Image (cartoon, rainbow, N blue to C red; front, side, top):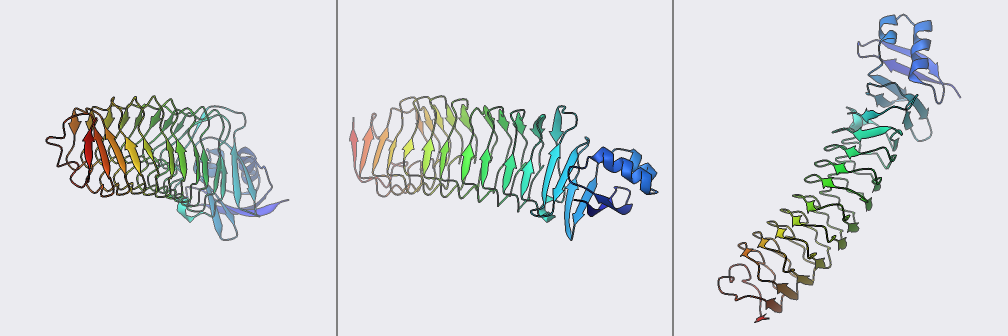
Length: 330
C-alpha cells in the first residue's frame, strides 16, 4: 500500500512523494528525477535520506544503496542490500530522536561501526547475520530498551562500551568471542546470568561493572586475567569460582560483590590487586594459595568471613584481611 513521505536532502531540499513497501533507494532516485526539479540531488548517492511517518522521523545515513521498507504499525525499518556485497553499518546521528523498535542488520554486513545505534533508547530488538565479524565501540551504548543481544558465532570482537548502559538487557550470548573491550557491558543492570566463552582469555576493565542483577557467572578455563573492576558492583553475584588458568586478578575486580558466600583462589593466581574483593561482606569461607602478591585492602570489609584458609604464613597480610575473624594455615 502506497504512503506519502517527505525526502530531505543534505542540500536542504525537501519534497513529498508517494512510496510503497520494499521500495528501493534507486527506485526512489528514478521517481525523484521523473517528478521533481532536484535533479542534482537525485543523481548523486543518497547518503542522507530522512523518512517521515507522521511526526516521527527515521534516517538512513549510510553510503551504500539499500532497499528500505517502512511499516506504519510499529515504525520498522529494514535495511537490505541489492545485490549483496560486503558492507559496513555506519553511524546514524539523531538516533535518540527516533521511534525505532526493530533493526535488522543485512546479510553481508561485516562490521557495525562505532556509535551506529548509540542512544537509540526505544530499540528493543536487533537481528544480525553470520557475516558479522565486529561490533564497534559504543555501537549500542544507552540502548536502554534493548532486551537481548544474541551475538552470532561469527563475531570475534566487541568494542569498548559497545553495550554500556543497556539497562533492560536480560539475555546475552557470546559464543566465540576472542576480544571484548573495556566497559563493553557495564551498567547492564538487568542481566542475570553470563557464560564467558572459552575463546576469551581476558576480561577487560569495567567490562561488567555494576551489572547489579547478575547472579550466575561461568568463567572458562581459558581465562588468564580478570582486569580492574571487571565485575565491581555486581551485588547479586552468588558464588565466585576462579578458574585454574587465571594468573592475575586486577584491582577492585569483584569489589562490592556482597552476595557471594564463598571464594576459592586457585594456585595459578600470582597477583591479587588492591581492593579486589573489598566489600564482599557475605563471604563465609575464603581459600587463598601461596600467591606472590596481595594488594592493600584486597579483602577489606569481608565482615562475615568466619574461616580463612591460607597456604602461606599470614605475616604481613593483616592489611588485606583486617576484618576476617578466623584463619587457619593449611
